[in-house]
Length: 72
Image 1 (cartoon, rainbow, N blue to C red):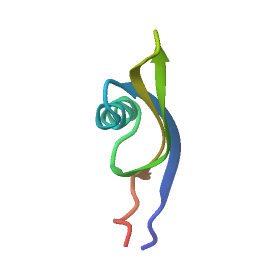
Image 2: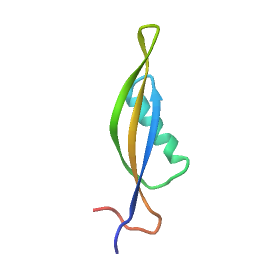
Image 3: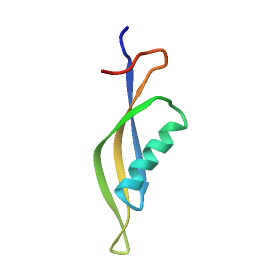
Image 4: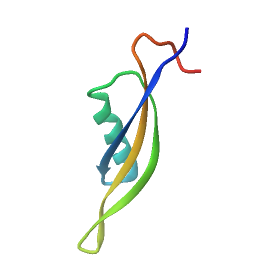
């Protein structure tokens, strides 16, 4: 049986890069299930008052389509 996976792009922010990635996965998990991995395409620091205020990540999140088998 063939596997089918989909990829969505999600942007999220956090106080650290790790928190931003976790926020992206958490946000995606509200609308999709079977998340397999997250790929961070890019990240940036948001500056306020000449200081880093937070980080933004641009991610690709892969999840299995219901009814498919595991990705090899």
